[in-house]
Image 1 (cartoon, helix red, strand yellow):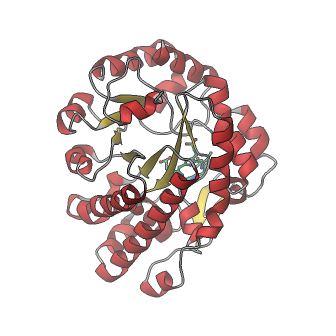
Image 2 (cartoon, protein in one colour; image 1 turned 90 degrees about the vertical axis):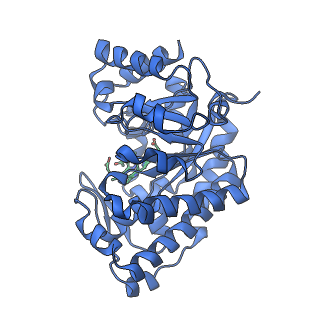
Length: 336
Ligand code: CP3
């Protein structure tokens, strides 16, 4: 029996569609907060296989989604490159910024630092129900580069765009991230990840003239490398904010595209070839609100996608104050 999510990523339209949610494991769940409160260091928490496996499984146990997403973080790759990464409580990630070639020369990828993630994957696969798919992931190079360069989230990425126009620096950074991210995703596939998602959460901060160099080209190179090692593991790209560039993004070789909540579904259907699965795109604010507005919008999305290979998801991650009962209601509605 081929799992539902994998059938969709192979190009089949399945009714009702499979469902999972970005950030389905996390702070909106009391059982997550209980474990997390005993771990002051977030990076260490991500690199603790027993805890990370438990947190990966929590939402699946509670809500019976069709997929589990590995509990980890996109900033584990800079960590494995040797960059200093930490999380300030209530403020988000901090990194010792890298802004020149001399800084890049101090970094090199140490796969051993991410070996615990592979152990997490093996533990999750042992306990995962037969019909549930395990999705591994990494940040896409531009998105990870913005954190590496800015040293934090929450900026407008001005500095990242300026440095993206410095060919020597940006070319070396993209090469480094393509190699590290490919090795990391291949190792996840070796360990038992059944599908992979590349989070390009900041595709929307790239101007058109940089889009090929910062988003399309590095994404395509990663896909080529991962597919060479694992031709049968499908890859979902999530180019959040890519707007009118979905057709170009589809040509990178992805098997599925995650749509953010600002994307018009008719436009996405028209611009992405029908063999590529679409995923999305309920506004996380409607999940937070719950009730009739959430249900009506979920039904509208499902109806719009009924003839497409389609995976129900949000347009971005679950927001922290979201009541878990709203998640339960949404998953049941989609699966009914
Ligand atoms: O459930 C899942 O989706 C799996 C785990 C996961 C996390 N981060 C756990 C996490 C995944 C897939 C990510 C991806 C990630 N991390 C992205 C791309 C997706 C997106 O949201 O756009 C980005 C940009 C990051 C970087 C990151 N990690 C930030 C900016 C923050 C702080 C913001 C915040 O919400 O506090 C994190 C921390 C983080 N990653 C948390 C979780 C559950 C919260 C940490 C905590 O428990 O305090």
